[in-house]
Image (cartoon, rainbow, N blue to C red; front, side):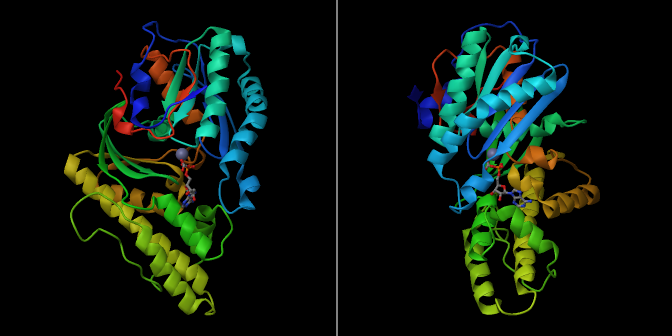
Length: 362
Ligand code: KG4
Ligand code: ZN
């Protein structure tokens, strides 16, 4: 196995065996970049045929975060049974597959190698093409799994555990970074803040749940970097503000939920302000929200309201396709295979991989 890191892997999707014959049969997608094993079958004409997901959350909860070696080993245990189950759900056998797509980065190197080795070997054995998919492109294209998908050009807000990015999408694979986080990603800010408030792992959804019963406006935290031009984010200072409020008010009745509410409102407002700024800057009228934090109900509601009021359209994947899943990888891989892109037979992964380096297709 060869693990490539950093920019050396930037040309994954252009390092192709030239074969322009379109893949017209269903594509298997495999996601193993972190703590979720996701498998799906996607057909460019028939759409999503089946998908399954196994989350390792319970296993990592005892440690308060993802333990990479345990993650890799669990992907080894779960991946083949999930592939069998997904094919059974789709009413298909391995022989019906026209290609195999897998997340080849960014992510945990061991976890990525499990998916890459399995998917690449399967493709080789079946004599079908394989393609490595950029995990964040998967998130970015996830709204295409829904009815009424967005047409480029659009602006995408990608908010996950590891990223907070605003991206101008002018076509599939044509991505320009408009703004990025200078420190913590939005999901990371949710998770770390939840942890310091004593909430169980994974903190983001737990904090959002607690915020539902909190009183709005009782605790007001800053909207970082909204008072100056630009589209970058910085969320690490919010943690300190929350910690101080929590320490000073921990005993007061209802304070915990009210602080959670104040924190969630600060993050959601900040994201919404920057989204509207990115739309104004690019002139785009369509906004896509993707990544785990895109499952947040308040973010969805606030952006839906802003869209209604200001006359732009906002697209969200269903919440289960905001967080990590195999369906988005099968879809992104199927589109790339359809465009004639293929990987060579080596098993390669890219734990770090620049989204802007992808090859545009179509
Ligand atoms: O996209 P994702 O599943 O994995 C990565 O690629 O990172 O995103 C996971 C992140 C975690 O930080 C998690 O706490 C956050 O998304 N998240 C949420 C919610 N659901 C997941 N954050 C806020 N509200 C939610 N409802
Ligand atoms: Zn993700």
